[in-house]
Image (tube, rainbow, N blue to C red; front, side, top):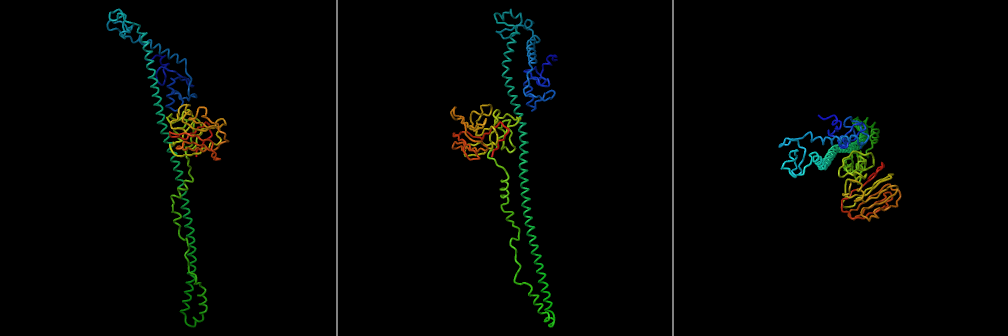
Length: 460
């Protein structure tokens, strides 16, 4: 069983003697790599034992515990040979020496035997200590490689978890977008059916009134016909006495005007059904938004917050994101989702009141890890400390940065003519050219955005 000292010097996570121990605010200690690995797996900085949240992402080292652990390991290494000594098979004596010529342990009696005459001999403890040191040195890169693979595995696990999160969020946003479209179609259907019902009611009422008038006219004519026919059937004396009155009654009925059909009496089917789907689509286009550039969340620095429709970006609190190849990890930047390797392309960025920003295009090969990302493969204009400037990676060292004499910019149009090798920046409010880059582009170019403020950059 392990001694009390060994138990006290054992890390609760890896169950081995402490290596570079750190102490958390709850007073529990762990190997530095162990607690980092634990936090990466749990996605939260909590103590592996008591679950208390640590206020520090990089806890302080425990120097006293480190010294005790190293001393214990050293003593155990020195004690191990004595505890595991074997006997010489020839002389039944303990191995205390080591023959450097034969590279094998030997006892005191072996030292005086002819088989080791003139050989170089050292104590087995000295040789063992040297070999342990050499083995530790040889093992060090293997341990480092193991840590590299473990970190890579952790990143893969984190990426796999994030893929599920991405899928869930994206599915929800797709459903929300389609729900909006469905609601638009439902409202459009209701409006069009309402218009149809209104026309049906209006024209039905008109036809009802027309028929009521016809019924009154028919009734009056019928009465005249019946009364006149009755007079015609009377005897001659009665007929002649009522003749003039009968003639007047007949002449009172207007016979020169016939009933007329009313134009537009039927439902205008063509008005309701003609090009229905296209007319609805045209109306839908008017109520939906369109952006020339969609931002790529997989390239966004962890401190950047993108809008749900991926057309706006601002700086916020750092978010847990996989360190994938496409992501910027130092420059607070994000790229457009689509690159260009031919043709002419244009987009507008509203910078508003943002006091600091960078806009331009970046080559596909632009380095996204470390500060060097801004030193190559990027053509840009920027606002920094109330000064505007343009920057090109291809010009002479002394001319890479060019000050710009412009007034306050609110909306900026970026226009790229890939084939002609031109990149323009315009003040969108005045349609004034701010700056023009000329370069023969050979790589796929992506829209580039950078901000370290909470003021959003809106892309149109």
